[in-house]
Image 1 (cartoon, helix red, strand yellow):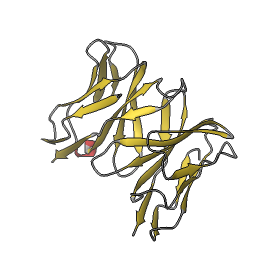
Image 2 (tube, chains in turn blue, orange):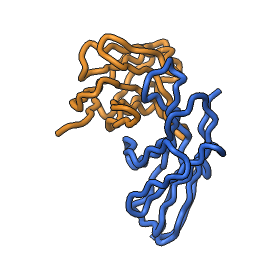
Image 3 (cartoon, chains in turn cyan, yellow):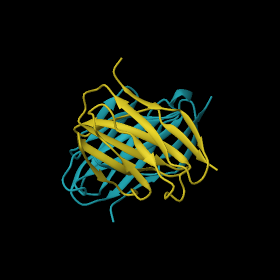
Length: 115
Length: 110
């Protein structure tokens, strides 16, 4: 059974700290791994990773994929209270008859950044 | 503005009633998806549609039905056969690997 496991499930830090969120997966026919940030309602897209070892960066956020060890990390440096959210990891694979864009989600990591 | 809209934001129903959740997008995406989110859980796929007049079951399709008569619209019906319908429902549309989510509908069935 395909699965995506995120750790930790929750995390409390103070502003300025650096955090690392983890996502491991076991899927058949892996195609890409995606990170989302969910604040109040709908998740917003952060990164898509398809190749090992290539870091994606956006401001204070960065992410990298290891396809050999089957995991990805999401780093947030110099955290701010606005980074408080649930961070979702999802893996796109070909399980559903070869169609595109069908994702298996982890349970998410709830990040709380204290002032 | 381009985007995905879901209505209503909050919905309350009595047990045994069918209810339809609306999802509309003007992003010109072929693919649309319905997810369910329960507290402490990730998103779980209910149904998806890659093209008009075609749709497939996801992981938890039992008790749900959908239609895709127009590219812009992908309504989800929660039937009385769904044993635990109270949840947060998210609609998404996508191009390639990226999916864009609507604001969600919180359904409460009592």
